[in-house]
Image (tube, rainbow, N blue to C red; front, top):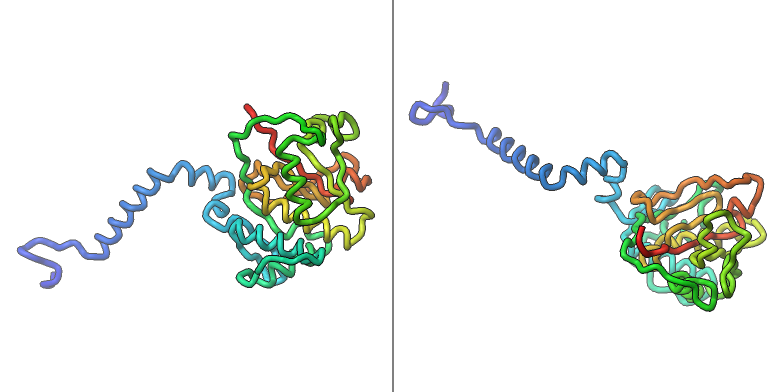
Length: 256
């Protein structure tokens, strides 16, 4: 036993041990406060999104994280530039992000941009307006027109529609719009993804619930916000696979 080990005949605790005990105490306190939510995240596989970026873009150089405002800026800029309109300043954004969004997903890679799903739970239920859309769906239609100009739209009509879509379709209660990109070509596919990415980036502002396009779908009800494969009832039908149009609908609102 050395002088450094004793004081008045008693052993002094080593400093590293004190630091370790302090860290363990802090960790225990954190688990008490955040443990349930953290464990739920671990079970669902969403914990990386809770602590990571709100949106991500798959670029030729790898994944790039964006916050929601950056995603909205990037998707709006490339959409306006594609139609020759004046685009906002994007000097603060990664050029590879803008390039991928402008080019669209390569081959059958699926979506390039994904954002966390956030479905507002305190919205009132709405009735049809004169256009055959609910006010939320009408707001969405106007927002798309401001950025993309006049589009080929369907899935709604004055007075509403009651046929032509699957059972329980959101078209029947005026909450859905189809935006057509016909015929099915690579150029039209690229333009469809410009819109689909823009809708996901702006989903929180516009109360978007689902976006379906090109055999993929995105849901505001999924915290992960990742695009998933869309299983069409008839794999040989381009319309049912949403190859020729982007389907977008808004939240119903009300109880439940």
